Length: 410
Image (tube, rainbow, N blue to C red; front, side, top):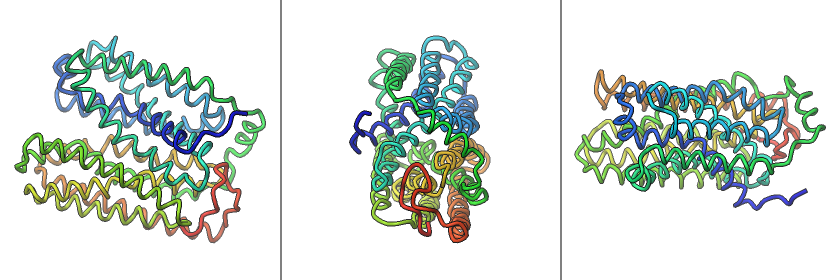
């Protein structure tokens, strides 16, 4: 048996896998001017592409996690990387119309769901329990990191060689991951039998609490994704120069990454009580969105940085908390919540755009503030249900494969 990888290597590998899954959609957003000029489609069609990718990922998330539980991390990574490779190479070489591109982007949504799940599997299997909070923080830094990579791809590749070449490069990277994944050990027959026998085991996370957490993830992530999509335009309309608006988004993304690492580091140094931290972050993020609605230059800077730094730094901590509460099915529990994230990522920006078109940006930012607040309230209720369930069904020390300490009130 090969030695366990170092924490740094394991965490960065998980982040890299997750980043690879998000890149098809990030490249689409960042190169939209080039792609739209080539394939001749407008704003609504672009919104459909992004929403379709996220919706496909949300629908595939739970099913592909069950596949991974039954077949192992190796098969899951191979399947997901193949989906990303088909998406990237198809978009780069075959997509000669909007509808063909849409089909490949939906395949990329399946790859995104699979690689996100494979990263979760990798963390739970290779990172020591006492460092998994930081590990999930690093892994959940993948979306802002992928946004940064995709942004750099525009001048480095898109404007120089054309947008199709950036997808071709991504396809090659996905093929490399396929080759690397063939070296992941196959699961033993005994471990497969154990997972199969545990399927449907009553010792799982309480269903209502998990569902409320997924809905909270949906509403809060929808607001966060709207921030990423529309802050540049709002900053420019509020008096900031285009360069300053770009710097604001870059600074906000950097703060979001730092925030995810900070809260993950803190989670490894306390026992439980992670969901109250996430609830507080969502509440402060809602304040940031409300400040954004004021529409002055200083308020956009302050509100945008607050919404990014705190209002978008909780996903890793929330996934980590859910994994700890997943009992015998930690990855399935995480998949349900991750599906909520994908659904919010698809629905949020679309809803923001509709509200902004009808009533203006300030109203749309207030709606997103309400969405983030609703997420905080739902999570508050979900935590009470989790705590009540833990009182009725105390979790043993070796409750699930991640071998983490049994949660105290979460």
